[in-house]
Image 1 (spheres, protein in one colour):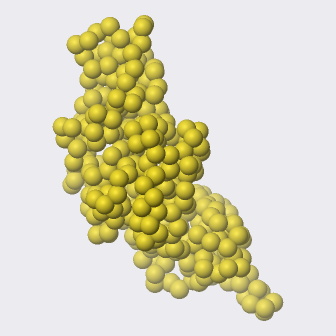
Image 2: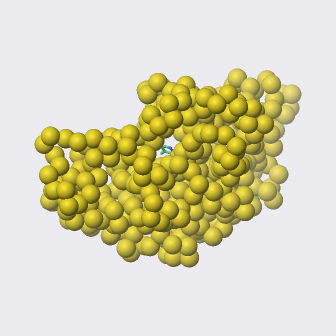
Image 3: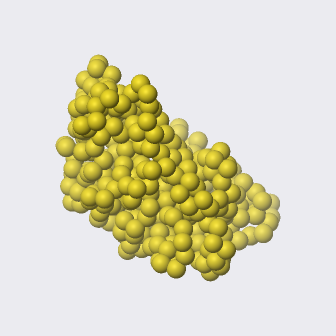
Length: 395
Ligand SMILES: *Cc1c(COP(=O)(O)O)cnc(C)c1O
C-alpha cells in the first residue's frame, strides 16, 4: 500500500537525517518545524481548510487515528463510536484501548450504509463520533461522507475521516460523481487522518492528522519541564500524543510538496488519475467478460474473483489465479472477508471468502493493465476452464 518515495523525498530525508532534527520543540528543528507547518498547510488546503485548523505529522495512520479518537471522547464525553465493517482493523482496536464502545453500522453487500438505522441510533444522543473511511483498505470504497455530514445538521456528534489511504485522491480528475461529492464533504468533518507514506511518495513514518477547530487542541495541550524554552515559535510537540518526532520526515514531505504541488491538474494529481484509470480499465475488461465477479472501484483498488457468483469455491480459484500470476512475476494481493459482507447467500454468511485484490500504486501500472488482462484470460481459458468443467460434471 506504499508508493515508492519520490527522489526528492529520498534525497532530502537523507540530508536532513544527518542533523537528526526533532520536531517536538522549536529548538529541536527550527527549519524542519517551519517545513512541517508549510507542508501541513498544503495538505489542509486540499480539503479547503485554509486559516482555521490545526495539524501535525505523526509516525503513522494508526497513531493519527488514536489521537483523533481520544480527542473525540475527551471533547464530547460520549463513549460510543460508530464505524463500518470495512473500517481499517485498527479503529476497533484503538477504540477499545481508550475505552470507547465501538459499534458497527449495518451495510448491504454493495457496502451501502443503512442510513435509517443510523438516524435512529443517533437519537439516543450518546454517539461521540462516526468514523468514515475515504478509501477502505480492502475494497477501496469511499464511505457515504456527504450523507453523514447531512445528519450532522440534526444530531450532535463528531465526524472523523480516516483518509489514511485514499485522501490524496481528492485531487484526481476521474472519480465518480458520488465519490467526488463525498470527498468534497470532507471539508465539513471534524478531523482527518491522511498518510503521506501511503500515496504521498514519502518514506515510512509519515502520517498527518488535521483538526478543523484549533480549539480541539485543548485536550492535547501539555507542557514539559525540560523541553519548551523558545516561546517565539509554535512548539508542535505541545499538541501531540508523541513526544520526539522525525524532523527528517517533515523535510522530505515539504520538499516533495514543493516539487509536486498538491493541486488539481498538477503532476501529482496526474499520477493519481493514472492509477485510477488503471482500475477503470481493469473493470472495463471484467464488465465485458462474463466470467468474473468484481467490485466497482471507487479509487485504484480492484477486487475480483474468477466465476460469475461468489461460491464456496471462490477462495480456491482466487488462490489459484494468484499463484498463476505469480509464476508470471505479476504480484497481486488477496483479500479475505466474511461472507455476509459480500454475498446474500445464507450458506456463505459465516464463511471466509478470499478474493484477488489489485492495487495500482504507480502511474506505469496504467500501461500494464493489458498485460495483466492477458494473463488473467490465459488462466481462465486453461486452468480455470479445465477445473470448472470437472466441477460441473461432478455436479
Ligand atoms: C493503512 C491504514 C491505516 C493505518 O495506517 P498506518 O500508517 O499503517 O499506521 C489506517 N486506516 C486506513 C484506511 C489505512 O489504509
